[in-house]
Amino acid sequence: MRLLLVEDDPMIGASVQKGLRQDGFVVDWVRDGHAAELAAANGVYSLILLDLGLPKKDGLDVLATLRKRGNTTPVLVLTARDAITDRVKGLDSGADDYLVKPFDLDELAARIRALLRRQAGRAEPVLHHGELALNPSTHEVTLRGQALTLTAREFALLHALLERPGAILSRAQLEERLYGWGGEIESNAVEVYVHSLRKKLGADFIRNVRGVGYMIPKRI
Image (cartoon, rainbow, N blue to C red; front, side, top):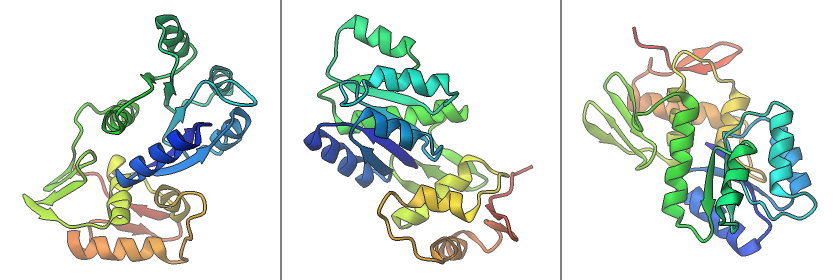
């Protein structure tokens, strides 16, 4: 899952980025409002973490601009502005949630997962597909009740495909989910992870649509 972090405080930004990466997220970090607008326009992010007191352009103005442009990416505001009027203004400007600093990283990760479930139209946190179950919060995967050991990127790829069974994700889309800025992408990385997952889940679990990408078929 790829997130955009917009935070000008270097200590907070580094701590949040490190903590969320350890929780399995890919996190790109920008430090001012103008950079946030440029990055968000790429359309590759599942969620935006937005500070309000930003250089160059205030966070609320960034949020208003994104919504005016039709950007529907969930936005979780992270700010020291704790007055009720500030919270109301942030939510009314288009934010999906609001977390006041200082905050606990575990709570932040839980709120992110809740927003992503809401965006996907799911209430149940665990993804099920037949006898396979994937829990995004604990990073546990079981098949027929038996725990599977996956690497972080195997988990991320499987998670991406399980979110939308029947949808074809291109190699480029999967790479965007697996790597952040500055990450060196090997030319056959997606193929390697798909091959490894097939060995653990079954040869036909992940389908290759030639010339298009990969999918997990819907269950009838």
